[in-house]
Length: 320
Ligand code: DGY
Image: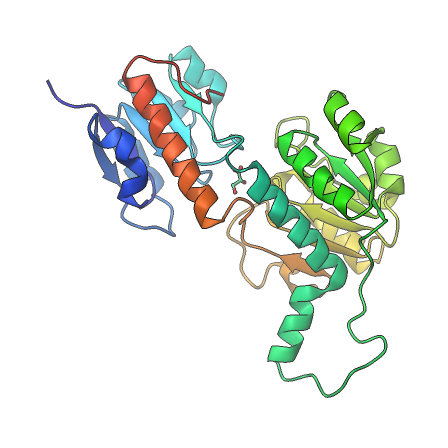
């Protein structure tokens, strides 16, 4: 009997897919840093029993309809706004993501971005490399303190809690807003639940970690930025579309808020001509929230295991 066929939409290190190798014939898109073209993905989906996908692949009704054999989609991300999970469920396709394995690495990056934006770390490093350092100055590249300030976390899931633990170590006052209250964060970390508006009004650092859904699309818009302190720094490590980027740009150039640290953008990748990338008060990163070598490899292994489990008729480890 033919082995099941699994298509992987980026070139990944083969050793990370070992749990799947015996069981399935694996084919990968040849490039590591370029997405698999839509027409190739649609073609491969026709005969695929499993798909190992990236957040840049759209797994929608059109694709699912053309994939009669498909049993499992494992997305190399905790976010899954690129997948029509309802349509997949109707067709009996199991969808999986990669929670937990990336929690601490993503929290590290979130806090690093917050520190970098507050203390102008990237700007300062670029400034030296451009040959600008001629002497020490009392207010040279002076940024804002982080310790003992107020952090407002929007989206208190496991990454939110991991960010709050780091904030606690910096002596920060922790506010959060979430669909439901999180007793663990309140008891262990002393985080205080507030309304969205209260959080915006009080936080020195507003950190967006909420998933992209119909409800959260453009949650951070003109009216939200206007409620923030003029000295506030906005950090986004969730999804770009949670923010109205034009409104964010406006808030920054009109000095309604002081700065932003952005790991994600509405349309990725962005070029250096993107209006937000041109602002000195924006620290921009290329969606590297979970990108440590160890974590990305753990995510790959989890995706491979999930597909192997589903193809063997067993429950996936992390079904969405
Ligand atoms: C995720 O896992 O959703 C992240 O955005 C990937 O870095």
